Image (tube, rainbow, N blue to C red; front, side, top):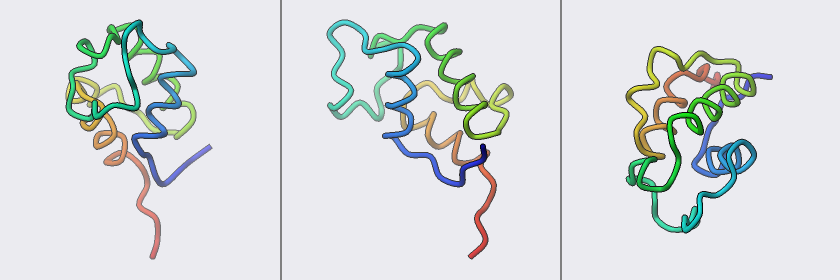
Length: 87
């Protein structure tokens, strides 16, 4: 399935489905610029998230994954890979 938008809520949904909520984390707080490790998501959780995004959105994130160390950066990286919607 191919999508043309990706939001913080999409990321949060996929994180919850794949890895749940780390103990003590508040995904409803302003965590957009917080490092994933500081939220409680390790590299395995991020790999699971990347795999889910790739399958659901039909994109390849392998080459840009290192740029996504915060939720805001992750959303930006995914958006940059999505097909442009015709106006």
